[in-house]
Image 1 (tube, rainbow, N blue to C red):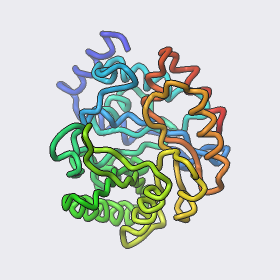
Image 2 (cartoon, rainbow, N blue to C red):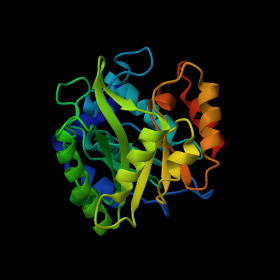
Image 3 (cartoon, rainbow, N blue to C red):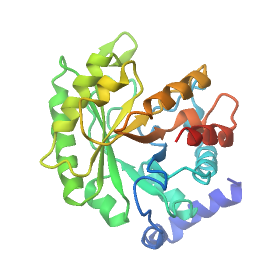
Length: 291
């Protein structure tokens, strides 16, 4: 991403903002959520909108938008990558860069639970809604569903996610639900990644809404993954999570989980966009080979 190209994006936003809508209307969409191999590989980049800029040992890794866009364009152009997940600011930039043709585009919906805030578990819908996703010609919406049995704000998050699932299913768009059992610990909100907690989270997430035809799950790779995904008949994508100290071990865990029939692919962000050696191409290609 050169300085000139970034200035071009800003100039378009100032002088011709309708160019974004025209780019969305002319985008060549995908034929399916999954690729020719029946698997999806989606690059996630919705972290900045929640103030979550850290990647590995770099606390402000995602703070430079030009650098993030450059990494995204590199990743999205690699063979095997089928889609992208982001908020409107990022997806609009990618539209202007012509980087979304043929890809599944999933808009991130609830980013209000800001990382580290006292209200972090109040995961309000502050980004896309179903109507905007449909108007843009995108393919689905993703929502975070963190469930804390000791925090009554969970009830409003459940209600918000239910409305989103209903609206997305009615619009025949993918409703991608990312569920966790969570609690507030000494370092802030912590997700319970035990198999029992993930089974409970998957069970709850599968049952929200008045339809499920277009509902997918996005879950982390934990111990006893067979038990976790056995809790639902919904298509499941694996959450990549943080940058690993030992990427080879992480890839091996992904590969094992991908053998489960209901697991249909990966949704990975920081692990591939900000690998420890900054080699985005190798990281993305290695993950794609797992599929």
